[in-house]
Image (cartoon, rainbow, N blue to C red):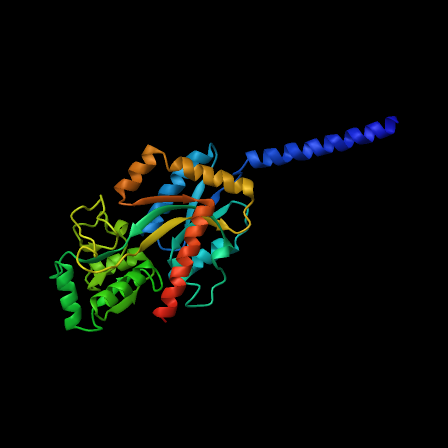
Length: 321
């Protein structure tokens, strides 16, 4: 009888130890550096957002948390997106997701991920695209841009952060709506496309609005591709105001590999939710010209699935390769 009681006590002790150990393991997250992968070069809108988010997520996760941005540019973002999808789902590799760009890449090439390859954490930014020219350009309005394009069919170079992303889709929509032909020139990220535009190497660009902020002396924004004028740029008309039914932008958020444990997912989503109400974070994002649009967990996944469907339709109707 004593032996049975001793055995039962040992089993109970072991079970309790396992529960306590699991609880401590959860409470200790993160125990090491969290890598935040960005599939584009430093200096672009996604990179700027990622570095701002990293700072505030560190604060929300608590003392000892470290989030390091790791730029992995190339292949229109595919290298970075693939790195996120293939990482160990342990909470120590997360990354930025750009919609519809990330999903578009799965249609024009062999990609080793799809919409189900990720644990969708939170969307942060909904950044509308713009039609923009160098400040020194002779083009001062959308009407003049269209006239220029019609006078040089297929010869007006438009700088893009990549093919198959929101910049490219914006250019396609503009060309179709205005009945013009453009020469698409992809770069390895928005920062390079912007540099080419400012240097006069391309005649126009279709970059996201936040990527024009701080460059007002070098760039002239002709129109924004959103439903309404932006509070950050109230004097810039929408393309719709000017008679062109064009709407396109970049959703930027964070995801982890599929299979992320529920407790770690909850920790990260909670940190992102708290970040979204931090006045300092909101001030930083406003200064950067980042229009905020938050969605979390399942809602973010639904957004990703909708953008995946939009990318599929664009590929079927206007293949870009």
